[in-house]
Image (cartoon, rainbow, N blue to C red; front, side, top):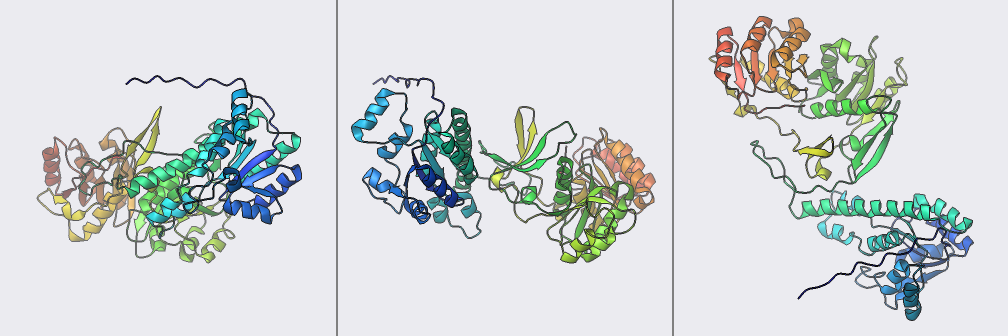
Length: 546
């Protein structure tokens, strides 16, 4: 059997101003409902409403028509069904310039709605609660609300749709002027479709997790399945003065529901954060988070110029700041423990200045010292970063924009296991170097490739970053480390393609090397290390960062 499909007949051009005489109000968020009720009452607007909203409006002195009286049917299924009825939706969707539409309304005794005021169940905030059960989440999946919003937004030529309390004042002002304009209704409709799209995306992401459709990276480095589609509504969280340069507009956006990582930061004081500050913060906090012991990281232009772990976070901070004092001036500092008074006192030393300090929390006395004592007290930004998985709302993916698209990968967050590492030279590293080798290979993960990290103990001594040849990165790292390279260790984020790097490493007095291995010339590189008497470890895992 064949079926023919007739396209809907196009409507005639929309009228401009639509007087608001009758509205439907059904809101989960009751914010501003008092002033909305007062404004509608003052304008003589007739109001239809449901359940709790009707009760709240009546409490504010507004006479309300109950939706059940309009539909001739009570709310059923614990409120799951109340507005889903032709007497409601025909009143919203009827086209004011179509005689046939108006005839249908007249035949069935249906009145038009000139505006719909609806916001949706708080699904996002409910699923954010640690003890939220699937049954609770499912009950907060709104059905009637999105349907009302979409119906009014579709028919914006003749009906206004209001979806947020911050729109109430402008909407009431339009009523006073004689009605909503077509331009206003178009903007409201655009906001409405954004609202329902974001809402559905949050539900889709939750449902994928609930159904077990998300996958996580596998520890052995094998391929992990990636989702075919990643719903991603982005909302602006932080307006920025400009981007990387003053002529570039910029802002921080985050997926709806994200409150971990930089999307959930809490700035305690200081100037507004910049685009470059946020990039540096990302680099600093992600390295600090890789270290289990108390650690501090100092970042300049997205790369660590200092990093250390120690018995206390203040000791780690002292070592990290001392690694490259010149670069540390005007840097970003991150620690992985609460920032205490001892840490603050370290930064009060003459000649020091940092742009941003990030920590899980700040001791009150540390905040008091940093905001009253140094000459840069008004400039420094103190930022608290919440715990939590920042990748949860992006299906476990790290996203990066390219022209016309997005690259996605599992984030490089799986810890390396030194138990799987292999000594490939004739001699093994001395036992006291084990911790330094592990630390160096952790640090090199957050350096820009080609990357080399020289560490003395658990402190970064020199870094070679972003070079087009690995031997150049080795040279820069050793020059930065200077005499501190002697007796230290060197880590590479990828294999050495030629033995020339080993010659430089030997001259600098490096005591041991750790690298992924995997080059066609591994045998030549190992032979060079043996000839120089330098122990070398292969980890079997590369850590490129472009």
